[in-house]
Image (cartoon, rainbow, N blue to C red; front, side, top):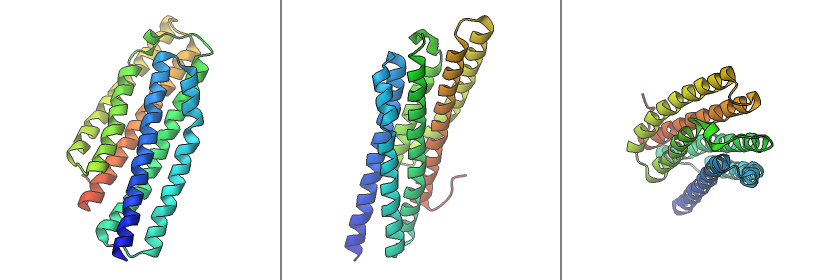
Length: 215
């Protein structure tokens, strides 16, 4: 029975890793479409969100089935409950990648240039790094990566303030179309939220490994 249970746990782990790969690709492609003004790539991300949602539902069903039909020991119980919470954060990161892509499709109907992105591009690179490291912390059970993600969250917050300042200045100086400026601010806000979800993931990983909540 235990061997069968371990197989189900391994399968659950593989599904989470696969979902993490889908989410990482989505946010990377969303930012690439922004930088390269690639509306077709943005549309691909926007329409591909359903695949991430379906994967979340699949993982939730597997995890709940394990909890209800098996008798997991404490460490396994932590792993399964962590999985249930993690996929919620991953799904929301996917949503935000989709939301960013929707705004990019709107922006491409107007005029904007790479130079108009200001601090958003650097902010996005840090956010993508947070997504990758939070998932790597989970896959490798690497507690050292958790502190790196937490530090990056502070950087993302700082960049959001920079973007907000840049947008205000653009509007004041009439350098950029107001609708474009507001869309850029929304993109920055979605990136900030992605950073928050990455922090949630690392906190859940910490609990799964140690059995304790991070101070």
